Length: 51
Image 1 (spheres, rainbow, N blue to C red):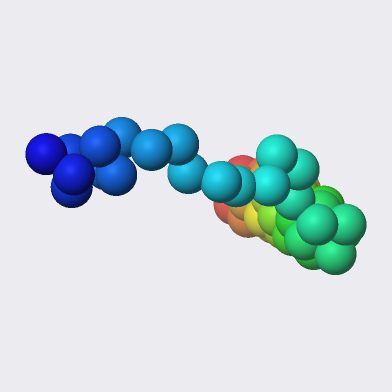
Image 2: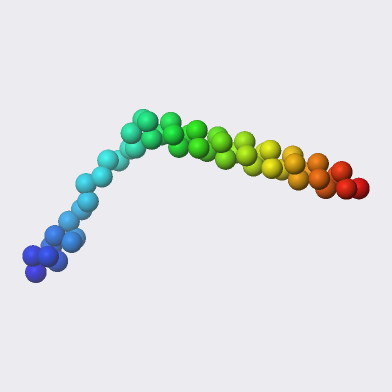
């Protein structure tokens, strides 16, 4: 019974990530967006270059 009560206890987590983590996530998101744009441009170049 005691294990059952402990397993339902709310986990203590910080509600907001640390500022360093937010900055890293923002940089990662920006890098992925930039990579996607570059990839789209290369694909258009290949498709239109083949015509």
